Amino acid sequence: MRPLLLYWIAALLLLPAATPSVLHAVENSDGASMRDQIVAEHLQNALGRLERSADSASPARAVVARQMQRFYETLGYRVAWTNRKAIARLVEVIEQSAGDGLNPSDYHLDQIRTLYENPPLYPAMQVRADLLMTDALFTLLSHMRAGKVVPRSLDPNWNLPLSGPAGNSDEMLMSAVMDARFPELIASLRPSTQEYRLLRKGLAQYRTIAASGGWKQVPSGPGISEVGQTDKRMPFIRQRLIMTGDLVDNGLTQGALPAPSDTTATGQNPAHVYTPELFEAVKAFQRRHGLVVDGIVGNETIGAMDVSILAWIDQIRINLERYRWYSGKLGATYVMVNIPSFSVTVVRDGELRWTSRVIVGKPNQQTPVFKAEIQSVVFNPRWVIPSGILAQEALPAIKKNISYLSRHQLSVVNSEGKPVDPSTVNWSAYHGPGFPYRLVQASGDDGALGRIKFNMPNRFTVYMHDTPTKPLFERSYRAFSHGCVRVQNPNELGVILFNDPVKWNMQRIEEMIDTGKTRTINLPERVPVYFMYQTAFPDAENIAFRYDVYGRDPRLLKALDSSRERRFVEDALRSLAVPEPQKP
Image (cartoon, rainbow, N blue to C red; front, top):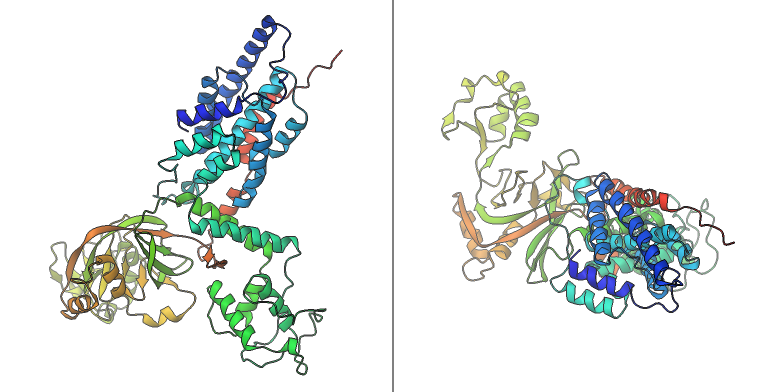
């Protein structure tokens, strides 16, 4: 935290209280001096303990401990929270942190409420109370700005900078503090993107649904595929879709729902008919959940409908945390691949310009989460088999049958790029590492990279490219690659990236491909590309959910709900929580 911010926070906390605090209401100056010395000693000792042991907790905790040390040093090691109105505002913003998917208990909420109602009278307890409040504020500021969980603690491949304060944050914070507005102080650090705002709004909506009891499960049964079919499960389906905004209530769900065991078709009760309106609502639900959009109510669709409201709430919380990691750091122009949604988007000058389907890595050959820069476009690219695929697939297959090379149109070349007769290679001697040749696939429609490739140097050897496996794009689940990202409409992406409708329009792209020659053309400017992992994100005014294809959500949820750092602070201050002497 910047020194200027520390100064202005101190200015707020030291505003005159409505009534004199016990600490400063002393009978004589000698008594005041003695108490100040005792307080200063307690503060210095406690802050020293926090700072010395913080590194063992987490890097983020160490940062907060140093901030607190500088803060109290600025105050001359005096208590800061002498203003009850400031404490009340602190309680308010802590409570509101739940709206961002954070846990108010991480900020000592219950203890601060108790301290507000029963202010401590003696130095040791006053210092403990003060430190808990300051830690609560600084920790909340940190979590709101960059997230509670350090991304690298879950994924060592993470190479994006954490979100930091905006360029004018000092001015915004100064104004908020001088006017004693803690809610505005926190709001100034909250991600300001529309995506975050809508996801936060969705969290509130889903919690409202949960508070009303959630939804009833749709009973299993035969598939419902045609408009006009009748089935006693229709009221369950209708009610479920109304609750999440996929369908407007027309009154057909009024009255008691049928017993779950009684779901066979009966007569033409209007409430049991699969109407065109309901058919479109089912498709909207399927679209939001990344399912095949066909309006057929089968096992997959019913399974998504029956996921509990609490599970969806946790999934929103998880993804609010992910947004805090990078929100505001993407820039005005970028490409983003969202791995769980199997999609790529291009934003230019802050506006969404293009989107397409993609195929990503299999669960056992995952596309990593990272940032790179697209630097060039390769037309009619040749494919050099990466070391991982070479060791795990190509070499074992060649040892079984050397015809693998011809079937996959692979040639063997040496380190100088000269062809090597495969029959002269002792294939049984190699298992991957130390293989002295390269296996190269010629360019063409049947090549693994298709007709166009987008170069983005990175340590994972991951890139985006065309593919001959076009039919796979019609599937809702598209984790089939070895880690690279196959793009459904790569020529369109090329036009967008060159951003020159005169020299590099679709016609020019196709002409370059039609030559059949391998050529690499640098982009006029490098374009950042982000490979991200969002399993919940805004969809207009609703929330879209995606299957956790790599199983990353549970670990993040566990870290998000961990109370380890809060307990670390409370344990470090436990020695100050001594019973206060009884009044005579």
